[in-house]
Length: 330
Length: 146
Image (cartoon, rainbow over all chains, first blue to last red; front, side, top):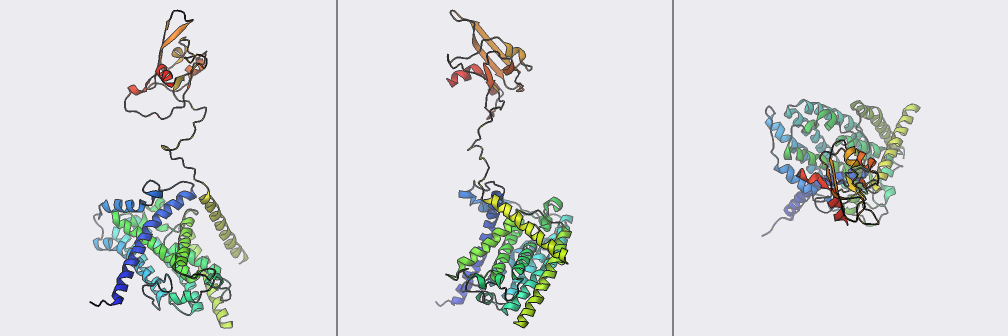
């Protein structure tokens, strides 16, 4: 019997992508708890398995044994579809991410655009879940999420447009291909294209934190004010899927930052490029995301919007204009 | 314009300083004591329930059965009894009971003891299911120690 290798490839990547997203979501929770503990000089999870490594499994079982409560008065369709709307685009984004020059599920020519298109569905999921919950905390939280994401998508996309101008392509593999050969070729140090490139990376990273609703921009679930924000009415695995979607989005954000600025799978010294370098850079960025969460307190909502509109957007515009001028001149 | 940029730069710098502090803490050893498996040495001034002191020369109690502790106790939780024995100078202790359910750990008994025969123990693992477990026979505890 002849089986089309394309079908096997498709199945392998489907399983691989879902497993990668789910495993990351589970073990990033463990990493977050361990890192938080050590920053506060505690030990963190240690009882379940060696170094608490089975903790995510036990957490998952606990969440699955809980009843999925659908409160009276909610919009049943929106309430149930919202966690899926958060999780599915996050998994779909993995399809376009090149982990190495051969390891990519679908090498789209518009990969960058696809990722940002999927990323905005995430906000829609949160908004629908909150609206469907018929809970005032959730609705306030959703209003915050939407205005926050609108505010931070602008500097993020301006920075990305700058990079697309430099690379001349939206194909993620080609963007990495242009940065091969050592860390001095990476976009973060591409000072001949624009001297503001390291700052552009910082802007992108800050926007990534805000887009994924991570501390210090976690206004969406400001526990002290909004109970659990959008997730207030969700129980059991409904909440669990939201949570996994959030961590999957962090992985996507760190991957995109790695691809756009840190040379993807390129080795800093030009030796043995491969998927291990990609994962190393990506997990370093994720480590930094968690590190930031356990360093800074939550900002105020006005501080958050002021940071975007008064600082990040003007600077990213300056970077855009400077880059286009330098591209024209040199 | 200069102020705007200066504020951004100093603000960003302060954020990096903060990250530096937390990463230093990250690499420092943990300070958690895993209590049932590890314990810290108890401080010398910890005041647990009272305990009889052993006389290093005779190996017996230093108690002379004067009853001062019993009198000093505001909660009446100490019972001391003794008897006269042939060939022994003074009284011999036969019973020293502490009703720890009533004791307020005031320490008046320790203060009033002339021969320094009682002291505070360092025992803090005190959990049980019966009230009777807290009526301590201190004489037996001292003998069990020998």
